[in-house]
Structures are given as structure tokens and as C-alpha cells.
Image (cartoon, rainbow, N blue to C red; front, side, top):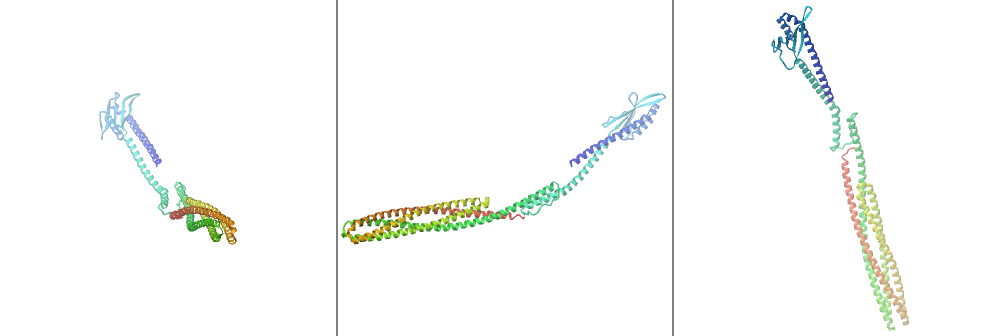
Length: 494
């Protein structure tokens, strides 16, 4: 539009200059023709001094609108006669000085025979008003043409802009608003067969919608997989909680068994102390002589019974030790299962990607706790193995003590001369009872160590329960997040 306006302005300037030049040339021709006529017609009347004829000729030339006055000057330069136009043509002393006028003059000569006489000059006062009017009319005409052309151009451009720019932009804007206002229909594309910038904009918008549709499709698939992973993680956490519940029951059973085992060990220690005391009494009585043989025989019988009971108690201790070994096997199996569950949870968390990072940390903590449980179980197993070995030694010692006590009874019943052997046997029994008491004390210390380990296991178990609860909570949060994601992506129509 600026170019068209500039062209119109240039044309207007050229047209005004052309009109000015044409009008100026025409005016110059008219003035020159008038001067030629006056120069040819005035000399004879002036020579004859026929002023009426002179003025008639002057009035005839003043019929032109551009001629404001005509004066005839003598040879001395003073006006001879002057006519001016002031509403009407009338005589005046001289030509007036007016703005926008100029003078054109021509010498007047008369040929009298062979002599040419100068009669003065004729001057014509010319107004440039017609020239200005012609220029103004040309300017007004060009302005009207420019306004008309600009109006036509603006209307044409508005129509073209509406058909070629605004309608495609409205279609693109409606498509973008449809996506932005929540309809989310990504299956519709902008129809554009144009090859200009608006067509490129429509094609770019279609490619953008296609990219968004592909991204939404892929993210929807990822969300579905994440939902499955969250469900698997929740099921894994539930299974882990059930396993931990059974493990807690086993730990309570183990604690009860250890309490009973410690009580049995203390009973063995007390019985060993009683047996040692009885042996001392038997030795003292053997020194009294034959009269106390019977008493010694009864004491030896009691000693044999005590040793038999001690053997029975130690056998029960061994059975309890075997039971503890079985319980430890159960704990080890539970720890292995916990480790396996933690490994599976870590794998599922890895599948979940960024959303399963917290869950992976929880699963790793569960696996570390399981490994600590396995390590503590191994230590308990080693301790129980030592306890079983010492129990076996105590059983053998009890068997040997029982055998010697029976021999002492037989010797005491057979002859009083065997008191020395009986005394020696009793001393051996006393030493064995001391060993039994020592073994019982060691067993009691071992049981205390096992109880401490079980306490540690219970603490680890409590931590595992907390970790499992946190894992379940993370699974629930992950499920909620996945649900919200599926709700959001459900707004898009593919």
C-alpha cells in the first residue's frame, strides 16, 4: 500500500508539473499572440493619434481573463493610455502593482516610407491566477483519484486479507483453542493446501499435533506399564509383609525355646553342684570305715541316680539344641526368601524408572537387612554347633560317671577293701561334676548370647517391617500417581 501511495504521489507531482507547464505555455502563447496583434495593430492609430481605435483594440485583447491591464508607453516611457480590469474595464493612469502578476511588453514601430519610427512600447499586465487555478484543479483531481484508489485498494486488501490470511488464521486458531480448552482431540488436523507462510504454519501445526499424539501414545503405554509395575510392587510388598509376619511368629517361638533352654541349663548346673556335693560327702563317709559302707553304698546309688538324671537333662539339652538348629534353618530360609523378594522388588523398581527410585532404595534396604539376618543366623548356628559338641562331651562324661558310680556300688557291696577305689572314683566323679557345672555355665553363657542375637534379629525384623510398610506406602503413592497420570492422558483423544 505504501508503494501504491508513493506511485500516486509521484504521478500527482508529475501531473501538476505537466499542467503547470501546459498552462504556462498556453498563457505565454496567448500573451505573445496578443502582443503580436497589438504590435501590428496599434502603430497606425497611434501615428494618426486615433486614441479611440487604440482603446478599442486594447479592450479587444483584454477579453482574456489572464490580462489584467494594457498600457501604451510613449518614447519617453510615460503612459499614453492605460486600461485596467477592476470588475470592469476602465481607464487608469498607470498599471497597478498586484501580487501574482507580471508584465510582458513589445516595442511599437511605424514605417513611414523607408523610415521606421519608434512609437514607444505596449505592455500587458498578466495574472497567473488561471495558472494557479489549473494547478489547484490538477492537485484536487489527483487527490480525489488517490483517495478513490486508496479506498479501492484498502477494500481489496481487506477482502484479500480476509480470504487469504484471516480465514486460515481463524481455522488454525480454532484448532489450537480446541486443544488448549481441554477437548484434547489430537486426531483432527488443520486442512491447508497453501504454499505460502500460512500453509507452512498449518503444516508445522499438523506436525506438532502429530508429535504430541505420538508422545501421548508412548507416555500412555509407559503409564500402563508403570501401573502394572505398581501393582506388582504392591503385591510383592504384601507378600513380604506376610513373610515377615510368619518370621515374627517364628522369632517368638525361638525366644520361648531359648528361655526354656536356659532354664534347663541352670537346672543342669544346679544338679551338677548337688552331684559334686554328694561326691564330697561320699568321700568323707568312705574314710569312716566299714561301718559306713552301707551308707556309702546308698550314697553311691543316689549318685548314680543323679548322674542318670543329669544324663537325661543333658540329652534333653541336646534335643533343644537340635530344635534351635531347626529354628535357625527356618530363619535362614525366611532370610533367603526376604532377600529374593528384595531382589525382585529392586528389579520391578528398575522397570519403573524414575518413579521407582524411592522404591528401589527401600528394596535395597530390605536386602541389606536380610543379609544381616543371614549373617546373624550363621553366627547362631556356629554357636549352637559348639554347644552341641560340648553337650556331647557332657553326655559322654555323664555316661562314664554313671558307669563308675555303678562300679563303686558293686565294689562297696562286694568288700570293704575297695574303699580306696571307691574314694578315687568319687574324686573322679567330683571332678566330672565340676566339669559338668562348668559346661552348664558355658551353655548358660551361650544361651545368653543366642538370646542377644535373637534380640538383634527381632530389632532387624522390626526395621524390616518398617521398611516393608514404607515400601507398601511407596507402592500406594506410585499407584495414585499412575492413576492421576492415566486420568490426565485420558483427556486426549488419539
